[in-house]
Length: 298
Ligand code: 6CS
Ligand code: FE
Image (cartoon, rainbow, N blue to C red; front, side):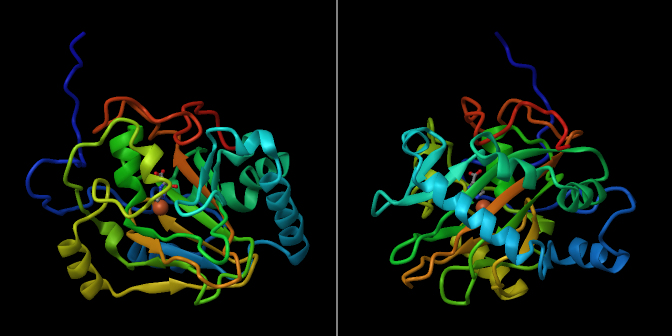
């Protein structure tokens, strides 16, 4: 069966040299009213991220932390493909599509304090493209190397445009020293293609050991962008959160301290940007990594 050619606005996983190109799309779509002020939207468009000092109450944090513990002891879940283990141990690294295994987290994903922001920023109705809890345990939670999420979601999930963002909600203290999220402000405005073909079932490797070549910008581009943009470390108390554009370069260091850095990440995508076939992979990734049930986020 011949596959029809289609426009690829963000070619990546290329052979030869990767040439960064300007982003073709805004980060803030439309002029919907919503929880963020005009100034906050301007800053988000410019920096590519926005910090919420306290998105959850201390009581909610307690409830979700207990849920994290419950999930980490669920033997059926631990044996499922939703779970990714740490590369150097069999401790829990990530649990994907948490709304399918936790009614509590399903309620959080659908709560208006998040979906109202998502509709405002994405300028349309929205749905959850991906959710995950990253446990980043103490004494060895491994790093996540620098990357653009959109580069992966475009190449491997078939997301056409960067009309999506993640909200990372701290369910434990995100200290300066236990592997908090780091971003390069403003880099969401440049799309840096990755060099090299996507190996089959690449996610089975890339989600566990995130020191990868395919799917990451080259060190030359990372060096230049870091020099131009700087690096901002997003530390914050449990209950705080940061939303960041799908194409913003980010990463996090490993955690050698005793203090886990456990966060829940929720990705909202516009219903006008639903997944097609991958732009640079043989087969789509599984449902728990890239949601293909495009019902609204409630
Ligand atoms: O491949 C993905 O979809 C995941 N990988 C990383 C390192 N961040 C975004 C996402 O969870
Ligand atoms: Fe990421």
